[in-house]
Image 1 (cartoon, rainbow, N blue to C red):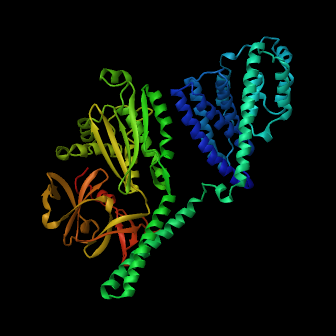
Image 2 (cartoon, rainbow, N blue to C red):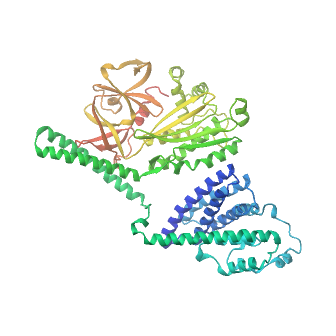
Image 3 (cartoon, rainbow, N blue to C red):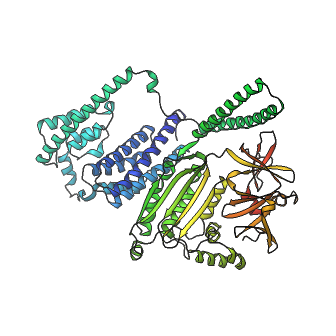
Length: 637
């Protein structure tokens, strides 16, 4: 259990550990492509070494032992005694997983046992071909080979370095901070190097070459330390303001409170603008003109403040994307496929709340792409494709929304097969199937429990997952689109508003009551007299450019009565294009989404409430919820 006095230090360690684990994972995947890259290998070793040191300071034994064993394997790779193999990479990645899972357990005060099987596996890999069976006189030989260095290594806790060449030991010690280097041990190593004494088990020639190399490394380290000292001396002469931290960690709740206050400010600004508009219409004077200048300036400042606070909640998509190379690598190995993951737009930023909830949906999309989409290497060759499939994960901005695409160059989706399976499961009627467009058919894959896979594998085929994607998208007022080209690939596009707390909405009235409809849901607005409305199977539909779109009377759906129809709003709700009738329109306005509260609770079809610029409290409609209530009546399933 972490002591309360150490809580802050532990929290700092967790943040740093997560960064180091991500760096190690990313580096190991790069090393698979470029095993000879010493720079990446050294960076991986340093990250694991730092992780081990921090865990040791906090007494996190299970992490220390695991990181120590993984570090020793990496050390052997750095010295050239081991070469990277899939088994080694798997084991170190397994160590990364264990450490990552152990952190929240330590935080919760749980007891974490050392993973003996994993540590043993890493130790075996570390020994490689160097392991030799000891004879009956093994203990006697070990005593004979013992040296003063071994005794000092034992005393200072560096037993994992016993039996290694002098230069390797010195290299390990040089990596330590100056105040942590055991001087007695370093002096003994210097003595051996200066006298030419040969360590047991190391040839004189090899030792001499190692000494020369080590001397060069020591001189380089000394030169770097001298430069570092000079830079520190220069830094001390600079004004204090240049040394302030560029990153300030702030509790998320404080950001949420600030965002709520800015939301209230936006509401009051809207009200003030409405009041000023009436004032301007009733009075004409210099004072009113001056007030107009002030109002314009305040409107701009509040907008800039809103944007600045919103940006504090934004995080780069890279934090999410960097988790998927490992997922793709493991899936491809499990399925015997060759897949290259291409990441694009990692610098794009999105709201932290949405970002944290996207991992699971994207994993489902990636699994489906690798399992169902991308073919086996041999099949791709027969089709004239490259053996290695390409999976592309992209992020980009368009307007006030961020888009995330998952695209593969695999076999695509067989829409006829999807339609047949939907009919078999009773998800659609034969009449409905005949009228469905290709896009309608594609969206059936997001129906709960839908799957075209006959068998169940470790990866997919259970009919779960894609509905999770749809639920997450609709929860955060997002949209989803899917395109496929049989034999060439599939692309699924998700889009979300840049901020989830403040949205632009279309203000409408239904039977005299005011409501707000999120503007992203509105694709087209048609005046009632220009709309072609007819009846199919007893239900109203809108005929729009040869498309038959279900028509929902919002007054009836909200149980307010039919009422007058002034406009028809065409919307894309999840996987379905739907039209809604309203009485009148009152323009669009930026509104702050407020929850309904515990007393009212959740109401299907209502996502929250807001206060408009003229002081009216209006409900914000959730068109997806309304559609779900009307689905059976519209024979959509």
